[in-house]
Amino acid sequence: MLRNQAVFLKGINDNPDTLVKLFKKLVNIGIFPYYLFQCRPTKGNSKYGIPLLEGIDIVEEAKAELSGIAKSFRYVISHKDGKIEIIGKYGYNSVVFKYHQAKHAIDRGKVFVRELEPRQTWL
Image (cartoon, rainbow, N blue to C red; front, side):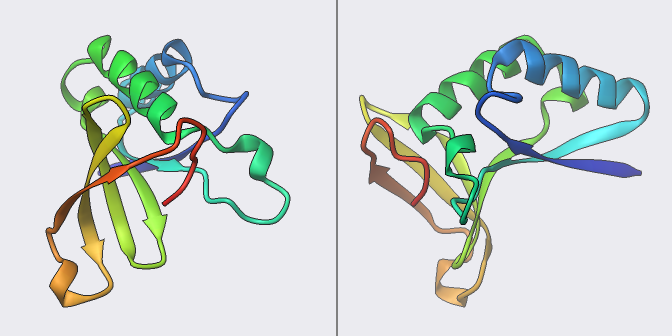
């Protein structure tokens, strides 16, 4: 089984239609969507960061148009403390996160809520 790991990039694949096409094409050629990574803010790529609150809306809109394996991917942040799944919005500007893989044993499976600024692209 092949699995895909894609990066979520502003101006490249930051709209539901593009994600739907990507994930459907992957499934059609036998590749399962696995992770959609939030763009890590590193030198030279800040222009590609998608605000987390906006990213959640885009991902949810795309998933509404997908079914089965095509919608099984996880929207994640590859953070210094581990791989953190972005579960969804909670209220107006808070987000629910869950450690998918944790660097520290105390964080394994931990669910937490963080209030975000509207343009915030990272934790």
